[in-house]
Length: 89
Image (cartoon, rainbow, N blue to C red):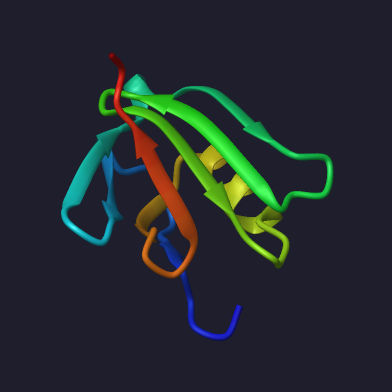
């Protein structure tokens, strides 16, 4: 990816920021569940307190998937990735 779409830190943070086109969200790690990546790591999906998140990219998201696993993500810029939050009905 040409410009960084996510930033990590050493250690654990209780929440990370998700930037979207219309708003910025703080997601708590304990609310994330069902984290999945496609076999090619071009897509990541997970459930959170705001609904179902879908992230897609033309480049590998393996590093982002690892940051989700390690819970050391500080900020995810969904504007630079194709990120959507689908709210529950």
